[in-house]
Length: 185
Ligand SMILES: [Mg+2]
Image (cartoon, rainbow, N blue to C red):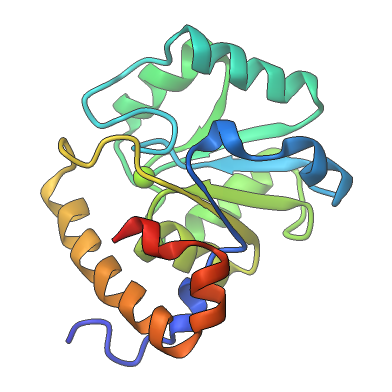
């Protein structure tokens, strides 16, 4: 098994939501969060989309008005990131190599923020949750927008994710239930 040796606790998010629209950003702000690191694919838009629609554009602008710094951090290519982020005047890190630390470091240096005041919002256990936990920041997991159009490497990660979910269920049953991770199976 590929993830042999990986500890289930490194894959448990701090919270789990249906979508980014369900996150309580006001409470996050009160908890000292100033900086949102946002995954792109299947967190903000699906793989077959390239631009933010009106609802998402307004939502992202609203987060800025609420005082949040926003940096998009994605393993996708430069071109996809600039196409999405430039019209919204959003900072980004392309080819971030999550779950490795380098992209996270770069994102925080762009924002000028500390780990303590930053959270990652993403849809994948193997890249987003694991990466954020390795780096040492909070992480909010959302359900993927559309799994049907995912690329082969993401489908591969999803298979590992399912195995890891079973491991979390076994080793940390109370967290598994309270986070409603069974919804992802
Ligand atoms: Mg994603």
